Image 1 (cartoon, rainbow, N blue to C red):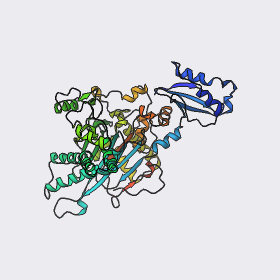
Image 2: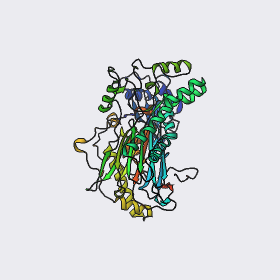
Image 3: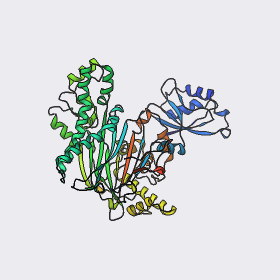
Image 4: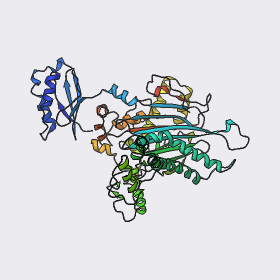
Length: 540
């Protein structure tokens, strides 16, 4: 990330901030102008007598980095142009911010999953991302089978909200239940001892998605119009007017099949050990946006004669994802939108709106056979992560993290969990990321690296210092070994931070053939979780 370096000094709160107010920002070189704004008092300051602190000066379209001498409070908003000066947090504080929402669970069920880690980092205030995880114990379909023959349906979902947080919150509350109910009906319809066809399972997942979106977008309107209540309208229409992408992974421990259902541009990537000992990165979803040629072709086929159905890579020139929950202004007819706006509230329909709906919640589903015995792992994350790291970097970083955890276990003695970990994942002492390179299929440089002016080939970018694999990914996405950049990005307040990074939600799921222990509980892995004021209950 590029910061202009400015050396400034504060004599006292009064004099220093007076000099700051005196800066008019008219010079083409803002760094020099800012420095001149403080130089009237620098000759009276002995820097050795006061502590020196690093600051960010936040402008409308630029960041400046500088130093401030003194103990006075630093956060200040200017009176005329919105510029703001903030003290940069230190590396210890940055680690506290990164770990504030981290969670980790040990899965002792003997059903092919041994652990999952997750973390969130807001950029919006409040965060517009959300997530949900559930494990459903499924009785055996064979006659006379006991509980010992049961299997698990395991779900992990990340939800990337936009234009507000209410749609993603609705998905957290209900999406997995909608999908599980549809799957249950499909399996029951197959009959005792029988299993549904693959297409029927996919259709059940799609039905769970689309039924929930119908409730959010259309059934809410019916209830609001019947009631005429503005209070009810405010409650029911919020998830319809905002929107959210959704990525839901569904693992059936009986078949060892992992299905990934993607609506929007969150992403799932599988890590698998190759014969060389390195890891391969296999994307299990495709970003569904106006930049995806297949999605563009689908949209143009559905809306012939509308050349602006995709404009500048966006639906009707506005919405980037072509599939999403909510976003009702792209799904309601012009009549419904106008009626709701006149009676309650809402957005004016786009002048390009002709043949809605333009956006669907129906997911694209992939199916992959998991190899728990080989230590496969899955990373699912909202698009904020993939704006900063490639698929290969993400898988390589988790691979490097695994090596570090195994080495740490060897040095400190092994518990049962650590022994399982070592057996599944092995170890390596190589310095670079242990990832097979993609060759001609290598990805483009992530857009945030381009924005920050960082070369993806810069040596020594990455670091391993977190017990939580998801937190490890977020730290390295923000700068890794470059602590100055990590601290600066975490110092930026909302809404300015949104220009440099998005909300982040990351989950890492580790597969493995560990034995069931105890009652098969899912228990907190406290060493990889943020400190909590109250004990965490087992999660199942």
